[in-house]
Amino acid sequence: MRHALANWLNEKGRHTGDSSRAERFHKLATWVEPSWSVPWYNLGLQAKYLGHWKESARYNQRAVELNPADEAAWWNLGIAATALHDWQEARRAWRAFGIALEDETGEVSMPPVTACVRLNPNDSGEVVWGRRLDPARIVVLNVPLPESNRRFQDIILNDGASNGTRTRDGVDVPVFDELIVWEASSYSTFQVELTIQDGEAEEMLLEICHLHLVGVEDWSTIRMICAECSRGNPQPHECKAVPLTGERKRFGFGAHEPGDAERILVQWVAQARGSAYENLELMLAATR
Image 1 (cartoon, helix red, strand yellow):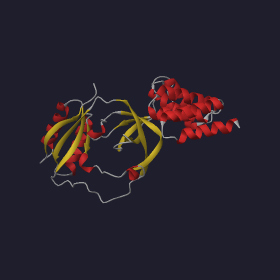
Image 2 (tube, rainbow, N blue to C red):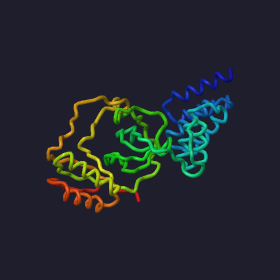
Image 3 (cartoon, helix red, strand yellow):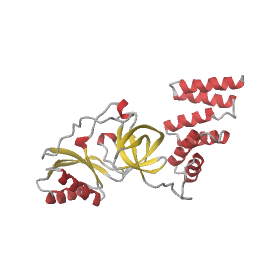
Image 4 (cartoon, helix red, strand yellow):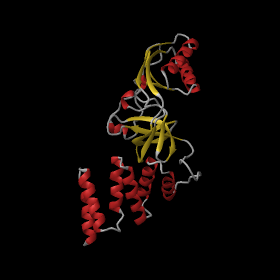
């Protein structure tokens, strides 16, 4: 009978739309059945989505103490510990989940893997490519649109469950939703209009940017899709991108200073016949 009441309270907490009421129901469930791990996990889950990292870590620690086989609680503990920069606890959580880690101290790191992250998943939902640093962090390698308020080289704390996929070189890559910006980039976002004669000129621009550690993105080719498609895997489509026929195109740059972007553009124009640029402007300043 007692467990039935705890189960009822836990379910009420799961299905109410109010976070304060949900927390009260789950806490009552832990009081009625203190040895049951599930309401502790749900408290940790709710705290994660509210960005209450200390509480999320504490609740998930209790959940895995009561049920060491609860993989979801271990994963959310790893996320919360990463948000708190508690590397010892994050390492304990990832290893309990079954992830092999070579390093023993300091910031958790893994071999680099291509990844996708959905920025502002409850708003614009822009999906960008990046490099995974560990199970809960991805560094952004695209230059996001300025409307996202995200920048080239931002480090994003990502959720654990994939929410759609994107395809690169025939391989499906999972998309993970952003939780917070774990570390803001020192790069600012600039916009410029370019005249590009052909694909060779564009490749030259990419190479120069790569050499100087500057992010570059052809914003003219960005595809706006619905939320349902974004959370799946958009299928092949008729590309609406403007062909490279000397048309003016909108590009985004991730650079530390306006002079960095301008020097690259001057070098590129000098080397790429028929190329030109104009209207270089700062769109999103770095957080200093």
